[in-house]
Length: 77
Image (cartoon, rainbow, N blue to C red; front, side, top):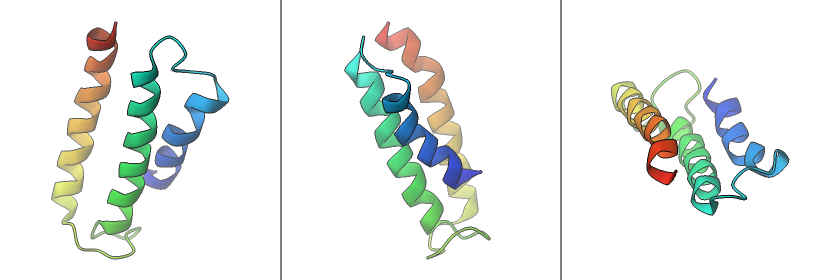
């Protein structure tokens, strides 16, 4: 699921016209998508290409991203 989610995080804001009211939300989604794609490439699991980041670190980053996305609407208004 990591690669499709990363691609959707990058593409959907543009396809759905999101971020018009708050450009930071657009950038947050796109930057997170790019970072997620790179993280997946570097993670040591079956979908990883370079396998240099332990899977446990990948899960911690996923958790932190979830917290940011939960808080973003509150913080950004």
